[in-house]
Length: 113
Length: 113
Image (cartoon, rainbow over all chains, first blue to last red; front, side, top):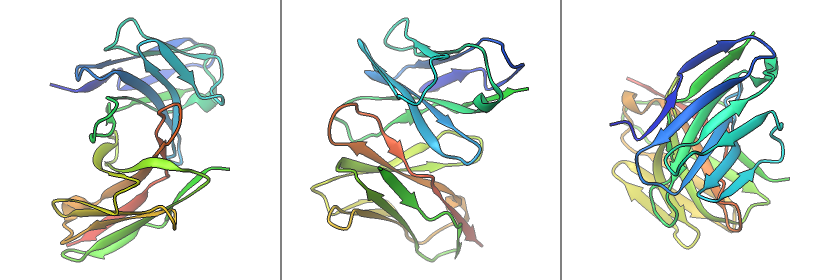
């Protein structure tokens, strides 16, 4: 059973389109995240969400919006895609007060053409 | 500004030797520090967590030290094996607020048979 699953694994789309990436975790964790890993492999936090609180990294354009239908899901919507949005997007989850760190999904490689 | 620095050059090491990686940070007061492993095309995988009041943590062939005075963590892989070849990421969890893990750029390890 996959602990944190993302779909799709690959996404190729044209500039200006709107797309979504889905994420689900079956670990019962209370917090979920979206990270962006750029071409230089730098992993940067975009959002964190735990039940009621959404924390947004101030550098993330408002074209990006997370949507959480329930505690086990945190989807990422991107409007008006730009070339610079091309990257690998990772979903992750964690439980506070543990020694087990974050659990990451396998990533979604987004290519904007 | 806050920085997490890891060596950008790959570490090439002979099988059986100990690989040592360094993580230095500035303008952080982390409650704890984590290490992750990332293989190409995969998400980061949690390895170890060490708290600010712990000097050393071990897990099988892995050892992590944490010096809050030097603002540095060392990550050791003893008796290295070709299967240990990967990129290793250092991550800091801020002491206050947002519970958002910040990552270094990672350090690649290549274990030569």
